[in-house]
Image (cartoon, rainbow, N blue to C red; front, side, top):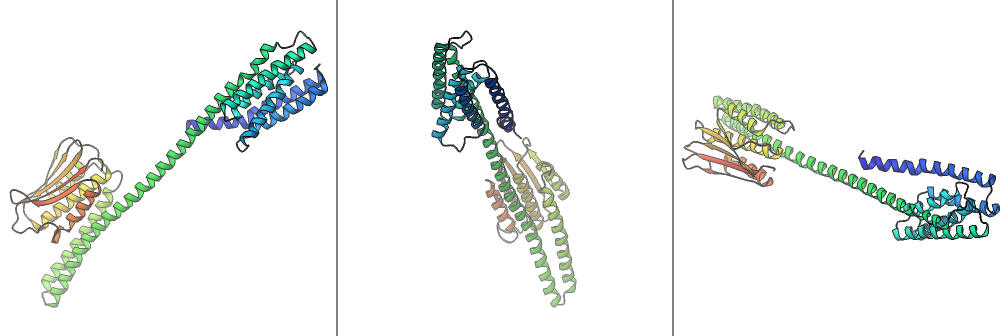
Length: 383
């Protein structure tokens, strides 16, 4: 729970439990005082006290669904009745209700102008009533009229409290909206991640199954021609492709895990297993999961194609970090026969380009100056 939510919860507890309890106790004590102590015109004072008590009880209730005009009438009625009650029973807790009426106006009325107007009405009525009661029944313990004007001051506290409550409510609502937005982004990211995983697994399976199917077709064709030894070799190659596909599948799943090792370490391990030269240029930095995985898949594809179409030539992998991008360069030496890009074994380059473009980067492959072959994938570091 956020800090604003905790404070708002405390405010609601105070509104629903603490303040009603205190005001109810004040009503009981004031009522007992009116009927046991000397007050002016007891029947009028008692009737007025009942009216003030009703207004005080109504102030406990939420006014959110009450029309604006009805709120103004309730606040004004509370203020006037409490102001008139003050000089009639000054020796009880009755003066407290005049101050409470001004505070209630500040809390309950959305318009500051209306709240201040009710507070001014409260203060003026109280001062006039004090002056009239003092003139009719002079007494040494009567309030001076100028002190009665202070009953309107609590409206400022009420307005401040309302503003604070609204600010807390808005902060909590903003926090809820932020949590919803974060949850929505998380769901979207999860869907994108699932799509990426499905695509990677599709690529691995498609590559492996296509090779297996070709080898099995070859074995079938050779078997029908009586070339059993060559057919057996094709079956063994199909099995080898199946085993290799399973390994690639496991490796792809491992690389898609959140705790995958850094890109340079993954490529170093891959190059060590393939006996390939590996070099890092620039300072390695953390990369987005999509960037790292795409570059690893590109390196695997490029090294596999190099071994397939340029067997025996020297292969090398270079990873270049720059302030904005990270670039993977895979090269191999000259081969007598090399398929043109995007033909035959070049199908992997199509997927490589699509993945790079989806991340805002680029991928290209072509002959090198020394007669070899170069594959270059450049991606933004953040993906």
